[in-house]
Length: 94
Image (tube, rainbow, N blue to C red):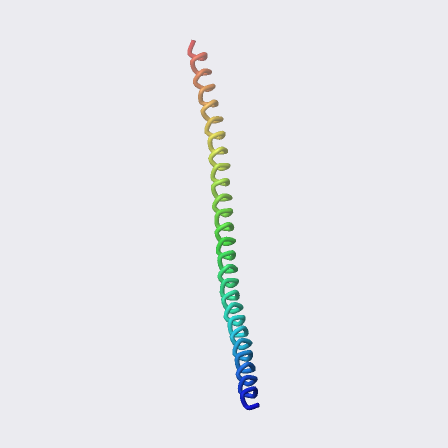
């Protein structure tokens, strides 16, 4: 009888050890998942900041292109006007 009592106690202790080991592993895995999730969210936030920065830079370059196109058109208008004035002066000299 005493052998069965020892055997039963040993099985209960082993089962308890297995349950505690499973709980500990579950806790460790959950903790690692949370760390990974935080890292993932941090990377997403960094990427969002990079996207916003690129959009701002793109808008700036687009504005610069628009400004240069307007300057080019204005300069071309002035050159056309000067050309017409020179042609008018040549016709006036004749």
